[in-house]
Structure formats: C-alpha cells, structure tokens
Image (tube, rainbow, N blue to C red; front, side, top):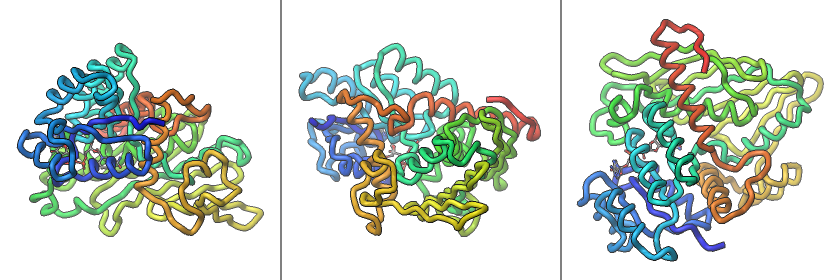
Length: 379
Ligand SMILES: NC(=O)c1ccc[n+]([C@@H]2O[C@H](COP(=O)([O-])OP(=O)(O)OC[C@H]3O[C@@H](n4cnc5c(N)ncnc54)[C@H](O)[C@@H]3O)[C@@H](O)[C@H]2O)c1
C-alpha cells in the first residue's frame, strides 16, 4: 500500500505527543510525514521542522499556510491527511479548515475544548465527507481488544460493574506548574477547556470503559476538585450508569502522589472479572468463582488470542510491546481504511467522531453534575 502523505500541526520543539505520533506513524509503516506546521510561531515552526529533517520547502510557518500551499500542489504530491497534536483549543480551527481544504484528519483527544467546538468538527466532517480518527491510545492495545471480544461474546454474562481509574501525580505540587510547557495549557481553561484532568485523562478512562463493555455511559454523578489557586479540576471521581444496566465508578486525577500513569480497569460480569492495567499492558487477568484465575499474555504467537488481535502484534510473547505500538495500531488501521480497506465489523481500530463526541458529552455532564453539587446528569 502506498503510504498516506501527511502533514503535522503541532509537535514542535519541547512538545510531548507530536513525537509519539511521528514514531507511531513510522512503526505503522503506511504513513509518510511530508509537511508540517509544527509550532505556534513561524520561527519555532521552521526550527522544529529542520530538527526532524522535514523538507524546508514544506515546513510552514502556520497551519493556515500549510493547508493553502499544500492544497495548491499536484494531487500526487500534496498531503492527504493532517495529524493535529496541538493543545485542545487548537483542535477545531485546523481540523475544520483541513477538512474544508480536502484533507482527512487524525486528531488527539479530547476532540475539542468544548462540546460546541467538537460538534463544529462533526458538522464539518458531515459537510465535507472527510474522515476523522481520534487517538484514544489505549484502545490500540492488543489485550484491551481481547477484553472487548471476551465481554461481547457473552460467555461471562452481563456487565455488572466497571471500576476505571486514571491517576497521575505530575501536578501534585504547586511548583509543578512553573516552567512546564505541558502543564501550562492544561490548567488554563482558555486552552484546555472547562475540564482539567477529567478532560485530559478522564476522557481516556471513559472511552476505555465504553470500548471494552461495548456500552455507553448514559448518566453521571461527579465531584471534581482542584488544589488551591487552580482554575479547573485536577482531581475528581464519579459514579456512572451504563446502557446495559450496569454501574461504574471513574476516578481521574493528576495529583495522587506515587501514581505515574496508572490507568487501570476492572470489568465485573455475572461470571468473571476482567482486569487490565496500562503500566503492565501485556497481561489480562480474569478471575472466576469456581476455577483458578487466568493470566492471558499478549504476543503474536499466543494462538488463544482472537485473529484480529494476533494481527496487530509485531513480536512473539515475552517481547513486550507497549504505548508506541498501541498508537501505531491506530495509525495503521486508519491509514488502511483511508486507502479503501473495509472497516472491520466489530470496531474500526480507532476512535471515531461518534466515540469522541461521547467523550465530550461525558465531560459536559461531569462538569454540570459537579457544579450542581454532585447530582445525576444524563448524557
Ligand atoms: N493520546 C494520548 O495519550 C495523549 C497524550 C498526551 C497529550 N495528548 C493530547 O495531545 C495534545 C497535545 O498535547 P501535548 O502534551 O503534546 O502538548 P504540548 O504542549 O507538549 O505540545 C503542543 C504543541 O502544539 C504546538 N502548537 C500550539 N499552537 C499551535 C498552532 N497554532 N499551530 C501549530 N502548532 C501549535 C506547540 O507549539 C507545541 O509544539 C492535547 O490535545 C493533549 O490532550 C494525548
């Protein structure tokens, strides 16, 4: 398959996730970075492009310039898609403009800084017919997909309860905000949106719960809090209801000391409990009442895994894959479908616009619930 030629927006010097996207796209093997508007100032954008060896002629000073000049190139040279890895307030403007210029979009989560801006992206996709993938990274892990297959098979009965947490400690001190590029925009509602940690990592937790159960979060009762002097949540917890009748709890915090990137999920069905933890992503534990606990291992040679789960792994068991490969699986699947491969029946291999819009509704409901004193709010 011919690689998808893409341009990156964001991901300049000192940025976090842009480099991860570039590495993931390279691992996926069906993407080729050919252009970029990598930073918010033209000088830094150019210097950032030079640093990663981007063609100077296609290293642009702004995303608007990139879209205009790329659209004017011959069809077999111009970019086909953009990857948007800017802070949340800078997702909707380039995403909408890119689709209007004829490009497909891969954008990081949360979809936007507000539900209204997320809806504007969805409207632009409907208007232009362009495609969008959202990088809810954790659904790219093999054993997360396997857990989804096992739950949907019905062999364990219905989902009774989900407990999902995503907790970190990198904002646990007041001084953590000083001189920290990643922190600066995340605690600023003008850039992050009205949600803080709930938007940054709570959306991943909610997406993971919905992905594995195959159900929707329908209502939420949340309490969001923050350290003194901060404007938006850095810590919060919620009860939620699932469309299948099950219940859940969700914790999202960036101030819990000792937790590094602790995304963990427990899914309790009538006859088994499934447990997956992002910091140990290559095992899935399944507990039963009447037989010993099972440990399922990831690996391209573990024949007990579903065929499509085997197909997205690159190394045999015991040679651990992780975050970058999970991200690469998202790029791989989206790229194949942009080239015309049919989307698999169960799920396309990346979070869709609908999935990401659900995340934005989850945020709106969580914020409203907390503001009103932790009452139940429907999504
Ligand atoms: N999927 C994941 O696991 C994951 C992890 C981290 C971050 N993210 C998401 O990725 C996005 C970026 O987060 P980050 O931590 O990399 O932030 P960051 O601050 O490290 O990087 C943001 C980059 O965007 C650039 N930028 C800002 N405005 C721009 C503009 N107008 N034009 C071009 N570039 C511009 C900045 O210069 C910087 O290079 C956020 O939406 C965040 O929620 C996702």
